[in-house]
Length: 79
Image (cartoon, rainbow, N blue to C red; front, side, top):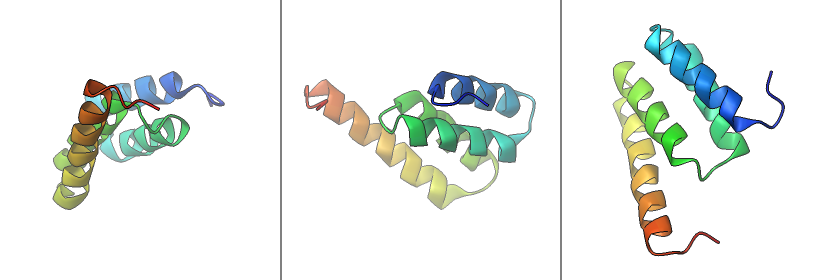
């Protein structure tokens, strides 16, 4: 679909989640994250989709990743 353009996968995931197609949204967010593991918004949207699917443990793990990424970038350790 988008090659290595994580934005395409992220935006498709957002559209799918908004339309209620959560399983497909999860797949797209995972692809975006695979291409850019530090993409906080993709981890956050993935967590929200997982939570809506009732996959609480997976959602919580993604929320923790978002927290860690926030700490990492807040302290300037983005390398």
